[in-house]
Amino acid sequence: MNLKNHVSLFEIVTPHANAVNSAVAKFLDIRDLGDQAPHRIAVLTQRAKTPHLPLLARTARLVNVDDSEVFQRAA
Image 1 (cartoon, rainbow, N blue to C red):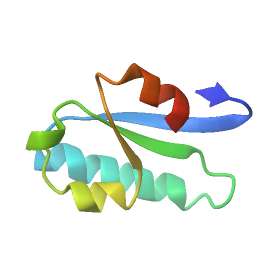
Image 2: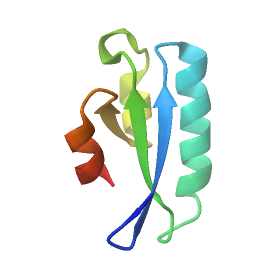
Image 3: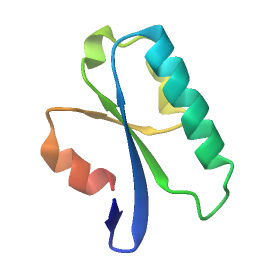
Image 4: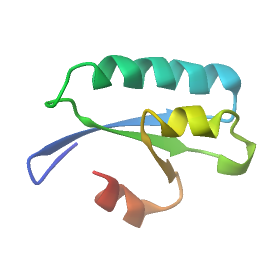
């Protein structure tokens, strides 16, 4: 997504350890692009059941899948 000249990368994350680990690895690779790296947003399908949230939060902004208004601000 490109909003106001900002590029953002959204990744849907399901409540499974493998999904979180996969997203973290992707977000770290993107972050390594430096200052021009896209904003990283993890879209959580079930926040309360998602493991390793602190780890995921270190690599991306966390938003809930059902909060469409947050998507606009996250980008």
